[in-house]
Image 1 (tube, rainbow, N blue to C red):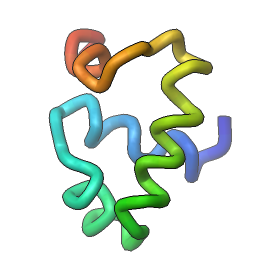
Image 2 (cartoon, helix red, strand yellow):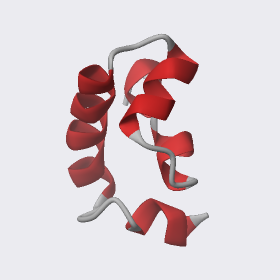
Image 3 (cartoon, rainbow, N blue to C red):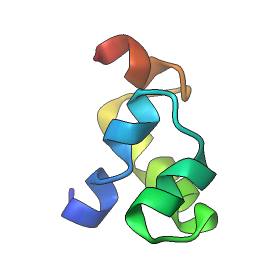
Length: 55
């Protein structure tokens, strides 16, 4: 996975919203959502709550 695809994962794991993550990374919330949408299946994650359980 690319760095840009991985960068939203850590804040998402802490429970941050797409809007919060976007503000931190200077991206649009829709871009953050897209990166998470593409990364979750690659990691075997089926819901947004799962990354928080992994940390």
